[in-house]
Image (cartoon, rainbow, N blue to C red; front, side):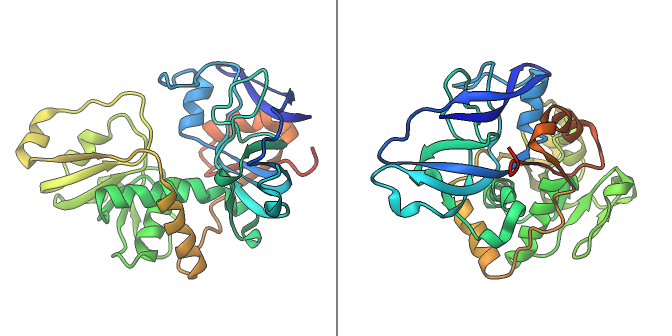
Length: 308
């Protein structure tokens, strides 16, 4: 069968068209996608043609690793999964396009083991599981942050998970005054912050000059954790040298990070609401993707596949 999929034909060239799906194997499930998120980090690099070379990289490709939907069919070994509401962290099931990351489509086929059961009551907020797991992983790698740089959606999740896990509420830097809203922690203009002794800083801004900003503010032997994805980074060495700075790079989240996030949600400690600011029909994908990357008011864009 075919699926309607978002396809990056080339940098800044997006289409929405049918693609044949691979057949369902014995251990596979078929998921009817209802919502998929647009990543303003990795997918922005794909859109701009600046994504570093990875296995499976190339055009045309189907993006997306933040989808939720229902299992509607399955192979002989996974029939018991039919009907489950699941999170889809991507799929590689298309004929005629690369599946990097493969979740932005009306239907996907994937190994049953990769379809993660979640509460249906989360609704479209369920697409945030990948970002929440990314935030959880960054805290695991770098320790509880005293300062978070950037109050986009990843920065908000890092702050929320820090508090949900029992940590002290971090300070958050944000240069955009329209993004300084918060309730359980302080969000301030970095120009007004006089502190120079942060023991642990976590960057969620993705800014190319973030290391110069961070190394000027850490305590002796303090650490900076990079939670985003970056094209290229550089920094002045002397400030880092004088502080004997440590640098942590947080990579992909793991199944344990997803389990940790789901445990916080189930315990009522972590709330994902209020983070999705924009939603558009999947038919509007050609306009939704550029908006997600350029509109500063857009914290998170989701596509609605229910009418496709």
